[in-house]
Every structure is written in structure tokens, then in C-alpha cells.
Amino acid sequence: MIVRRIVLLVVVVAVTAFGCSTAKSVIGVPNTGDPSVTIKSAETRWLLIKNPRFGDVASEPEYVWVEEDKIPVTFGTVMFGKGSIIASPEIVARYGAPPGGGKISSRQNMPAQTPVAASAPAQTAAAAPKAATAPKAATAPAQAPTNGKAPEGPKRGFVVYVDTSRIVIDLTAVDGIRAGTLVSLRRDAIPLVHPVTGEVLGELDEEVGTARVTEMRERFSVADVQTVAPGARIQVKDRVVPK
Image (cartoon, rainbow, N blue to C red; front, top):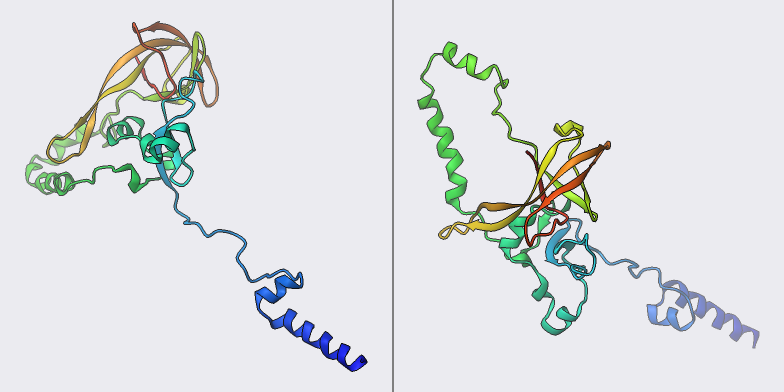
């Protein structure tokens, strides 16, 4: 009898150490060989979708960036599928790049760049040596004021918060903003897409209001709203251009 118990104990130990996962689960031994996490790609892909909170919260934008595998479940997605809230390429052009300059998911259906657009800079560079026939002495004075760089236009920023009568913008003293500076609040209205190549050329914008800077902080500025265009409403992500 004692011999049988010893043999049975040896069999149980052998199954526990070397047996299949089914046997281990029967006797209550955890299987440490099974993966505990789901392997995910290290590169994040982004989708611009219709914001489910838009209209309910005053400061919420109409569209937001989300990771492609984290599309929220809403009544619309249940009825019509998740693709129903994915923004069109024209809307994506108005909202700029994803957070951190990430890559846009292929589900966004963005038009690919054509060889025509890619070859234009190469042609310009090839033609430059032929045109530069003037003596170096003649070109030196023109390069001196800008240290060889093209003059920059006015610094542009964005509205990051909207209150009843004031807003917060992401421009600071480093960008040339001072207390009393009047800024124009603009919104891209009409996307311009090339009818042949499909390339997004840019957008025509319109002024939705103006504001005057009243308070300076290290990373943002506070401004009082001065004017609002008829029928318009200042929103987060509206562009800010000093007047």
C-alpha cells in the first residue's frame, strides 16, 4: 500500500513538472508558458473621427485624433459601423498632423502624393545653378539681413481653451506676443484639392473673431474676446495670427 502511494506521488510530480497544460489546470497548477499580454505594434496609427462629445461640451472640438484600435462605441457606430464617424481627407487637411507628428492610419483613405509633386523640387534645384550667373559680390548684400534665410511670416498659433469672454492661446513672448497685442482668430473653411492629382493644396480661411492679449504666462497667453463674426463661435483649434 505504501509503495502504491509513493508511485502515485512520483507520477503527480512528473505531470506537474513536464506534463501538458490540461493536466496542470486540472490539479490547479498555473501554466507559466502562456503569454500574459497581447503583442501590439510599436508604431501608433491615428484616425481623425467625429467627436462624440461635440455639442455637449462647449470647449470640445468637432473632430479628435484617436488610435486606430480605440474608436469609441457610440449609437452611430452601432447602427452604421465605425467607419461612419471617420473624417474625410478634406477635414483631415483642416486639422493638421496627428499628436506628436504620428502616422495616419490607412483607414483614413488619404490621397497618396503623386510623382508630379515630388519631382517639382528636383527640377527647381536642377535649374538653380544655371540661373545663378551673377557675381558673388552682387548677391552678398541681399543675404546679409536674413543670414541666408528667407524672411519668416507672422507666427501662427492655436486656441487651446474657450471661456465666455476670454480665450487661451499657445503663443507667448517668445513668439513676439505682448500684453495688448491684437490677434485674429481664423478658421479654415474651404479645402483646396487639386482636381487631377488629388493633392491637398491648402485652404481658404476666414476670420471668426478677434481678441486682445491681457495676460502672459510661460507657455500660454490669456486674451479677452473683442469681436465675433455674425453667426460664428470661437472654438478650440481655431488659428491665431497676430494682427
